[in-house]
Length: 356
Image (cartoon, rainbow, N blue to C red; front, top):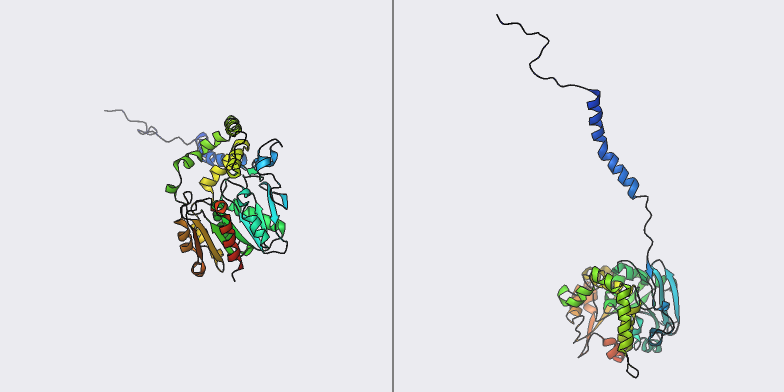
């Protein structure tokens, strides 16, 4: 006869319920929220980084060639004003009671590019405002993204500083993109007329040279802004000019900025990548252009911003604005139309400004 098993003995194992087991499980549940809370405490108390601002041409010594080519008193009525993104330079020409006109320069050349147009407008009785965009000429170069909002806000703050309620807006090249962004974002500050000369804003990637794309890459612009590279550029700039040689001030000022201003190359690169050169269709079609008259001027041999873009800009304008928009094609003119055909441009502007 087989022996009987003890009734208290079980053939299967039993789950052990222990206070240690419950503590371990509870700890696992607490770990994720503790990690998240630690991240919040570590990330949020840090203050925002201080904006790094690079100096302008005003920082160069009196011996620098820039003072001979483009001094800070190049135009009359010059002054500086301090804004959150750095100090900027502007000039006022013409009679104080004249109709107000703003001239916006392009990608790489500061306000000197208007040297043959601005005096003609002032002589015709207009109150002309010129200024250097951030990162160019006598305006500081903030270490930031040079997007359309940066440039349009710069002009809005400047007009507020001058107590200008409205003005006619004129932009050349990238300045045309700035004018479009400004009109879209601050239509109340724009008078009834906008002029776009060889205007960027719709440039397609295929029309930007490989060299420009390569030079505007973040890695290359970092190298181009480094001290060794700028020293090399300064050497080239100093050795390229020979006594007695005729110097084109427009070309020379670009070389001097690139060689001597630590923030210039980064500003140009960011403007190419992020600025109002491409992708601005929404700005041109904005309701900010409602009730405005638009004049476009474009050279037929512009190799930088193809003439095909001006008709495309007109097609994007609001319906009523589109019907009154006008394009002036300048035969055989390139991208430098405001310097090579300055009288024609100034005459077209004056005629357009007088239209009712």
